[in-house]
Image (cartoon, rainbow, N blue to C red; front, top):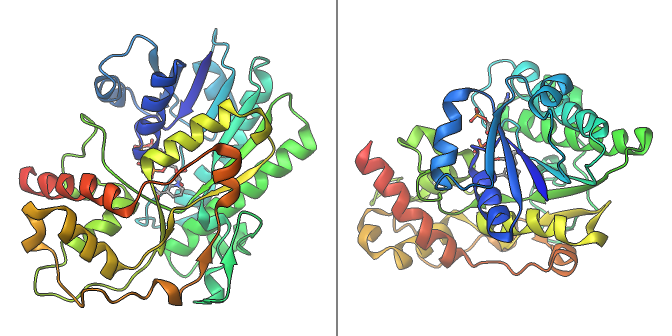
Length: 339
Ligand code: NDP
């Protein structure tokens, strides 16, 4: 069976492609310019079951359909969407590609009769209510919804708020599309929390400024400077990228996942914990990482998370923060050393 993966050069998408190929799927990935084709192929050692096509406008269903001519995919993983905070016009740079991008792939999929399932990569941003502030008595689950609207994103006070609104509006629009249009496929929504973890060999960014937004949060802690204090926590819940990739593949393999929404989360964390764990698991770089106040934990003061429905339905077990940081943090220091 063939699976389409949009935004194939992205951090999470690369891991999804790797897991799909290992599971035996043929993969057709989309990128927005032809210069991105070869690097993605190289990451997967020019796997014979991997093809990459160019879709230069992710907000156009016709653009997708042109690129997919002759293909009979059984499923689509839609990951292409902006996750960065360097936007000057929130509507143009974040809202439109997220919302119209989702509408375009769903409309294109409705035209391709072979498609049985679309997995929509949403976010904890679609669940979390940032205005509620820290509330230790609250436990977020996949049944919660962010109150942010499209207009909130356009008029947001800052880029992180606009990003959260872009994901929320895109997910709401996707559920509305399938309930109104009743396409032949079903929808699965995956809502990962902050995704940390290593780059696949060959997909390592050439410079720190090219590292994806969530791994940059780890870098901002470990690179703060040995004698500096640990910066305040922003996340503050996380999941390993390899578990997110498994969730995408299992969302295809488990028939009863259809129509469901799943939060992907190992647990809550705080930046002091990132520093403590990184110092412990990366002895080579431990001396560079801020000491702060070892053992101090603020995680319990934020809120709780319960991702047991993803564990149950998608059969997931979460990697630990130790596993994730032991693989990621040395890579980040290597990127800095070589840039
Ligand atoms: P990356 O930035 O690594 O990848 C994003 C992908 O989307 C790239 O292929 C990028 O292409 C493409 N893309 C972004 N903006 C546009 C645009 N305007 N037009 C066309 N393509 C675009 O991010 P991640 O791998 O971290 O994120 C992948 C998905 O997962 C996103 O939907 C994100 O919102 C979601 N997510 C990520 C989380 C995380 O912590 N990383 C947490 C929750 C959800 P190009 O390289 O050409 O810009």
